[in-house]
Length: 80
Image (cartoon, rainbow, N blue to C red; front, top):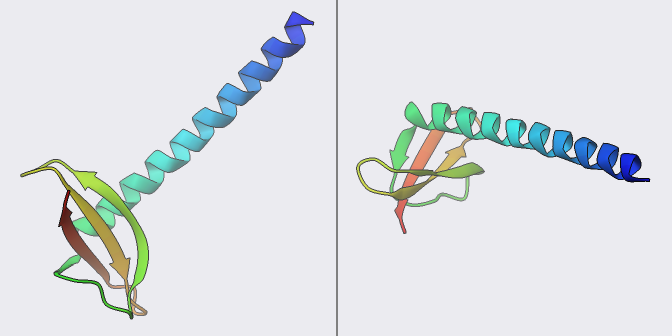
């Protein structure tokens, strides 16, 4: 009986680590896209929201990344 629970626990841990890897890869791609993005000061209705992440330099702030129909990237820096 214990062996069945242990196998289930290992399976759940693997699934979580795979999801964590996917999320980390998503954040990495989002940060790369934001590096070359055009800075904006406010949102526009024509832009599609891609995601957000936290940057710690020069001060801690949130970065929202957007994209338009031509696949150009835009970033909006927001303070907490």
